[in-house]
Length: 428
Image 1: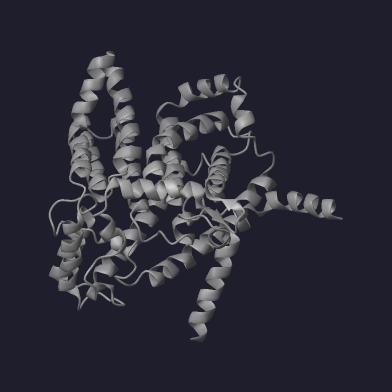
Image 2: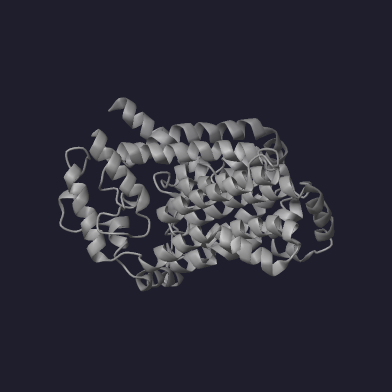
């Protein structure tokens, strides 16, 4: 009986593409107000607080958006959190538009809407952080590069625009310099090399063109901030106390969350990451193992089914991209957020590469079929039904893996969370 039930479900699941897509769209629409409601106070120090880091105490990493928000709030008498909401939702919606423009035909649509990609920040309450904003800026850089390749924009103007977008991203969060800047440099190098036909000249030209972005990243590493900067930022927001709602944190002497973290050194981050190796949930779920399994399934979902025309290329690219993210996994423990940025940016990157180097990549895909080592490391998802099941039940906590966070972050659990939220809101 059990076997017949499983066979019935696997037979039906391939046919729920439209309903699966509709479910994810519904959860995205319902989840945005839920995220805004949960992050409406200054006291939401890891979400709202990340946007409020500013230059009140001098130049520090991540301070550009907070400085702009402070200026606009002061001049226009607007609650700073309203601006945080605007930037966050704007970033998500335009990132979705960019994914539709770049990747809609190259990936399974429910995958792009799932908790692995667009639904992820919403279901795990990091929509009100800078992650979507950073991936959006990365995608815009790829869009400019695409236009440069197709002669739709002049080289000089295009490279200025890429630097402008990258500098905004780096000054918003220095992690962009770790995961995004290397691939942008590589893509520019490929473009320059087609003209110069010389490795060293192409490399030096690429570094020269992107020097403003590289210098910005170096400045963020050197002038990362200290406790005095954190205190000055916290004190500056007290000037807007009449505009910004708080449950008490704004009145406290010391900052908390993302603002306070600016004042901590790298050793504190490393110690927190290292401590993950000794953490268990319910005495069974060892955190490193659970994150490894999450990454394992994310790679398989990104790769798609074997009938995908770029199946092998996807597996190679997502693995290479993972290498760039290793420093982030080492120095910071928000692993779910890094997985979102890793997968989402890789969707955009792969789509760009296929658009620009289509014929070469088709040839490369044929050659990659001969290598079977990845079949053993990352087994193929055999049917659409199994693939849909993974999408429906995969949850990615933003950090600190636990069974509870996994259950809430997957589409089924997040549906129940939305039902409870809107029901309580309706009857309150």
